Amino acid sequence: MKGIRVVAMIVLGVLVGYFYRDSAPAVMLERLVARPCEEPLTYVLGDVDERFGVSNDELTLALHDAEKLWEDALGINLFEFGDTPSARTIPVNLIYDTRQIQSDVSRNVRDVLGNERSELTAMEEQRDALAADYEKALAAYNEIRIKYEERLAAYNKTVGEWNKKGGAPQDVYDELAAEGEALDNDMQKVVAAGESLKKLTEEINTYNDSIAAEVVRYNELVNSYNETFHQENPFAQGTFGSRTINVYQFSSGEELRIVLAHELAHALGLGHVEGDASIMYAKTGSQSLKKGLSEQDITHAKEICGL
Ligand SMILES: [Zn+2]
Image (tube, rainbow, N blue to C red; front, side, top):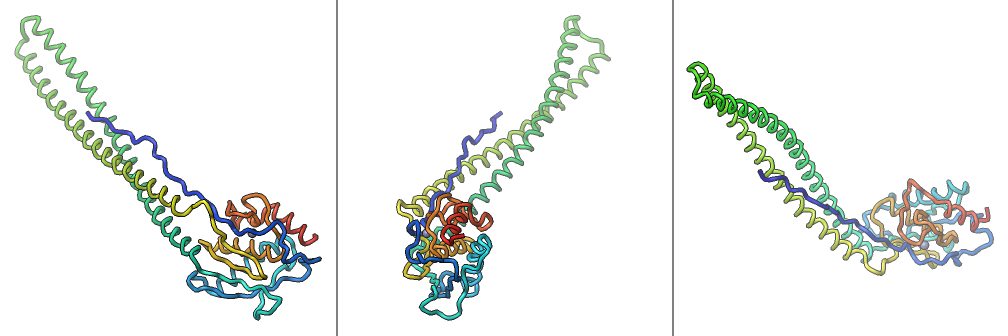
């Protein structure tokens, strides 16, 4: 019987890469005032390109969440939302250019990859269910096969003994003939069980072939994704300069909030800090809203604010 081929080494590609948040110096000279946190910094909504699909209300909410990160950690009112722009307010712009276009395309490809991965997982689950059926069928097959072989051996032994004696009396002969027929019956069952095992094996092998082909396809997609979207020169997601916050790229509401928290802090005078979970880390790392500010973020903010 043909064995089940094992699909060895399914190594799935990993998506890698990072963006620069921006290229700010360690301390922002633009707001090097004596007491930068004494009065709250007022920001207003600037130009919000509708192609981001973020309404003014949603951006206001995101800004509120971003400022709250710092204010909760430091226990002071650092930022305020202003209704009217003035020389003292900081506009927050969402500027749509190739950066966000690339980000949107990249997200679509990631969605496709996610779907491919789910399909693959479903196929693997079906294959595993079949493999479990196969194990059960194999155990049942072995059981009837061993019983048949034992019964056959006993029959052959008895027949051999009678043959040595030159033949059996009629009643024994009839009994042995009946046993021979029963054995033929059993053999048919063993053969049928073997056939259905073979069918299951073929089915599983077909699944394994499809899975192997799908894994190759998936890995090719991941490789081309990594080549396309993670070049040598990652770009900035946002900037703070000339008393203006510009946001160029984000792929989720959470990322928007993190970029805003980062740029708002620059506006306050903070520079970059170490630790890839830090909001003020220069690159995208492992920041999350759930983690919030890192120790480095808080220490640096307190230093700048003179707390
Ligand atoms: Zn920065």
